[in-house]
Length: 106
Image (tube, rainbow, N blue to C red; front, top):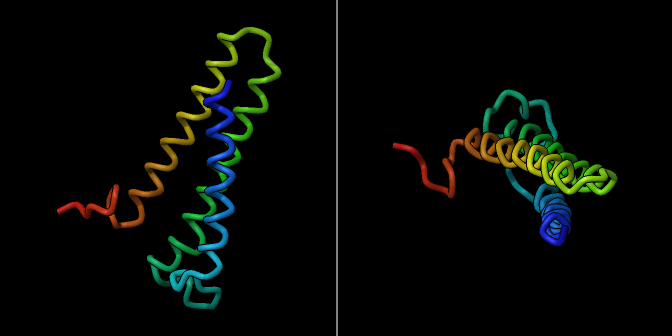
């Protein structure tokens, strides 16, 4: 219960920081060339959309698991939704072209 609460807090804190960075970043542009350039499209549209889905999955997992009766069902729901969120994070970061942890694949 405490771990899922910390995950929820960290995720929402990351969302707030991400929005701040999003609106001051030079990679984010709102003009007619945004969708033509792959890097600009990724940072302006794809990354933010995927991370909003991740935050929603983690939040839904936490809220919906609290309503279940058995501990096994709660843990199963949290595991499934948090795993899907983690896989979406990894998939989205790998689409950036930077590689995972900033290491570009050779």
